[in-house]
Amino acid sequence: MGALSNIRVLDLTRVLAGPYCTMMLADMGAEVIKIEIPGKGDDTRNFGPYKNKSSMYYANVNRNKKGVSLNMKAPEGKQLFLEMVKTADMVVENYRPGVMDKLGLGYDVLKEVNPRIIYGAVSGFGCYGPYSERPGYDIIAQAMGGLMSITGPRGGKPCRSGSAMGDVLGGMNLTIGLLAALNARSITGMGQRVDVALVDSVVSSLETGIQRYLVNHEIPERMGNEYAATYPYDSFKAKDKEFIIGCGNQGLFEKLLDLMGRKDLLEDSRFATLLERNKPENRIALGEIINDWTKNYNADELVDKILGVGVPASTFTTSRPTNIWSKPARCLWICLTPSSVPCRSTATLSNLWGRRWRSHVMRRLFPAPTTQKFTGAFSACPASGFGSFPKKASFKTSDQFFRSVLTFRRRLTNAF
Image 1 (spheres, rainbow, N blue to C red):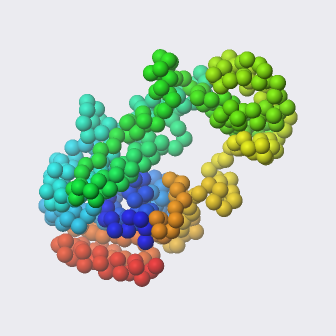
Image 2 (cartoon, helix red, strand yellow):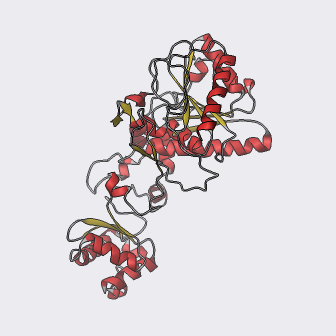
Image 3 (cartoon, one colour):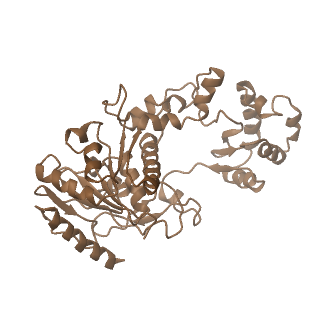
C-alpha cells in the first residue's frame, strides 16, 4: 500500500528521464505497467553494470513495475492499448514529439477514449518550438541548458556533471507536473497534458547563475567547488586530503573563525561582510588563510572539529558501498532494496531520489520486469519471483489480458 495505490500508469518510457519519473510513481504505490517494444525492449536492458547477465541500470529505475511487450504499430496492438487507456489514470512517454500522434495515439485521441486521462511527456526540447523535433539526451540538455558552462575547474573546459542531472531533473519535474495534474483532476474531473523539456529543467536549476547575468551582466564562469553566492563554501586542503567546509551565512563564518582562533579577521574589511568576502581577490586571500590552518590536521579530524561547533563540513565520499552504505542508519536516507535480477541475486539497488517517507506513502519494493522473448501483438511479463505469465504468453484480446492481470494481481497480493 502506498500513497498512489489507487493510480494506474501506462509507462511507454525508456532510458532514464521517463523511467525515473515512473519509478517515483511506482515507489509511491502506483500500479505502473511498463510497455516495451517487442523483441527489443528498453535500451537500458543493454547498459551496464550487469549481474547474472541482467542490467542493474535497467533494474534500478524500473523496479516496482509490471512489464508488457506491445506492438503499437499493429492494429491489434493499438486496440489493446486503447482498451488499457480506458482504465488508466496516466500515460507517460518520452518519445520524440509527434511520434505518438503519428501512431494515432496522441493525447487528443486518448482523451476521447478517457477524458480523465493525464498524459505526461518528457523530451529534449518539449513538444513545441523550433527545436522540438531535435533528438535530445542528458548531455545535450546539460550543454544547451548552461549547466556544463558552470561546471568544472577554474580555467578548465566545460564538464558534464557526474550523474545524468538533465534526465533526473526532467524526470522529477514530470513527476511534479503529473501529481499537480492529478490534484487538478480531483477538482475539475478532467485530465490534461503535462509537457516537460530536459533543457528547460536544466535552465531552471541554474539559480544564481541566471541572476548574476540578469542583474550584473556577468557571464557565470566555472569555479571548481566554490559557490558564487557565499564564501567560504569550498574544498580545502588538509594534511592528508581535501575536504569541504560550507559556511552558508555570517553566523557560521564567525563560528569557523572562532574555532580557527582568527576572530581578528572580522576587523579586516576584506572579510568582515559577505559582500566583501565574495569579491574574487578576497576569496583567494581568505582561502589561503583557511588552508594555512587546515594543512596542520587530517581531514577526518578537521571535520569532527568543525561539525563540533555547528559548521557544516564533510570529507568526499565515493559511490562505493563501503563508503556510502556503511554510514550510520538513516544518515543518507538511501533505501537499499533486493535486486531485481533473476536467480535471487544478493545485489542491492538504491532509492536514488533520496526521500524518507512514512510507511503509508512508500510501498514495499519489488523487482523490475524480467527479460523475455515476446510473441504476438501483446505479451506480458510481470516482476520475477511473484508468479508469472507463461513464458511466451500472447493475448489476442484485451479481455484475455485483463483476466491474466487479475490472476497475477492475486498472486502478487498473496506474496505480500
